[in-house]
Amino acid sequence: MVTPGAMVEIADLRVRYGAREVLKGISLEVGRNEVLGIIGPAQSGKTTLLRILNRTLDDVPGVVITGTVKVDGVEVRQVRDVFALRRKIGMVAPLPVGLPLSIFENVSFAPRMAGIRDRGELEERVERCLRQATLWDEVKDRLHSLGTRLSGGQQQRLTIARALSHEPKILCLDEFSVAIDPVTTMRIEDVLKSLRNQMTNILATNLVQQARRLADRTAFLFNGELMEVDRTEVIFSDHPANRKTYEYVNGIFG
Amino acid sequence: MFQATSFTRRKQLSELMARTLFLLMTLMMVVPLLLIVGYLVYQAWPILSLDFLLSNPKHGMRAGGIWSPLLGTIYLVVISLAIATPIGVLAAVFLNEYARDNWFTRVVNLAVVNLAGVPSIVHALFGLGAFVLFARLGKSILAASLTLAIMTLPVIIASTKEALAAVPKAFREACWNVGATRWQTIRHIVLPNSISGILTGVILQVSRAAGETAPIMFTGAVFFKAVKEGHIFAYGLFDQCMALSMHLFTISTQVPDVPKALPYGTAVVLLSTVLAVNALSIIVRVRLRSRRKW
Image (cartoon, rainbow over all chains, first blue to last red; front, side, top):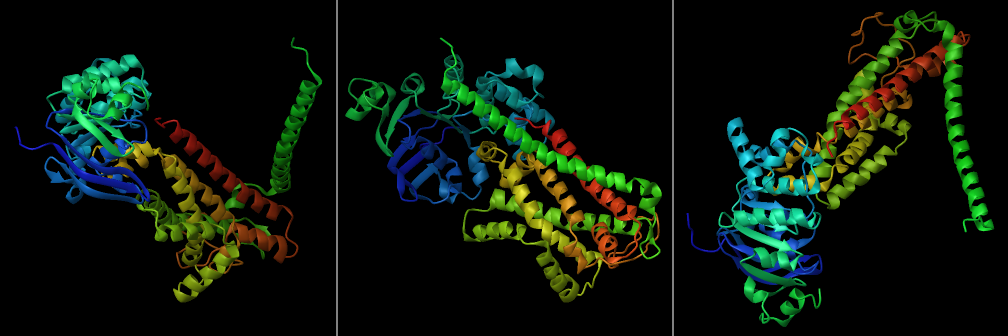
């Protein structure tokens, strides 16, 4: 099922919270099944950029958005069924959020809310998503115990399984490794590698090396401006187009 | 090396003084409560019996029991909360889960806070004007219950909002991110995890509705009314009724030559009803909280 055109198309996107402009004219495309890394220091606008895609930014008081954002060819702000849009996108937040439900219910929550009632289908989907998130072997014998009792790293993988449970076309991860140890981080990175070619992946990260390990292309966001986006080898080479990129990637500032 | 300096000794002394002071104040708070309960039970002891609960006042309130005021209070509490709870809880869900921060919600929130602080006698006058006269309910159990409902409503809204706000925002965001609607999120995540707090807030209003005298005095409570003894459906919605709080007031101050044990017995029943309800709210809270999942 190869549809032409990019998965995400952003043109001249500006976002203000009241008087504070946090995204200052971003234009960016993400191809189908591409892995795009977004690097940049705190407050550079990474989270805002992700939340634009599934329209959860709408709930923020005083937010003003201009420019166009298309997901799968559709302008997100003209989407009628915002819930269908959100199911198209899997979101993983910086801190793991296990819902106060059982492990099974955590993963079956989204399909159930989308109207799937068939027990067998739910079970099949829960197993598949937990396997994709490499959590299945650890939890298969206690699917009905609480998701919130898992360790931090397990909960983050549970969050990923939940983000996959509504079969998204795009998986967005927002600094998923800030609250988990390096070993678990590497396990999740392996998960992401295995999802390559199955869906588009947008990976906002505070660890520049993570983008280097995973991303096909990397965007450098700084202070609400897109400094540079290019193939990851170029961004991490000695001669990216923007001097600032070189300095940030090599820890000279940031 | 670890010798106490004079500074350390001074610190230890002030620590001891502070601790003692706080302990004394805590004791001072408990002592009157124990004294009151003990004194009431001691004075009421001769009269307390099942018969006292189940028979009407007799001989111009100078004998008999408290059946009709007890039943009246139960009617008022149950009906007023049956009215106030759904309205209050649903309004709080709207205010906390749906409403954006704009002038309308600010006005509503301000109204809730201020209504909670309105003295009960003012509610009584409002109830008289709105329900007894304007709505032509007359002095009746319904009018009095509506007045009590108006009085408890803002507190139920406030306590429910607090219970809802205690559910972490991150849970809601996680639900929205996977395409759940607001209502699905409320139904499956927010309400199950705030129900103990909501119930506690509602139950605490039972004691308030049972204890207030002013709001029912003008709207439905009467000096004396005998009803069928031991029959739970002895009152009708449009009847006037007796109530424990007002009964206690009348036999303590308005009727001469009442045997001493009678008002004390009434007070003990009122107090133990309130204490029992509060204990129930603690049990509910503990039981539901032990099911809490984060």
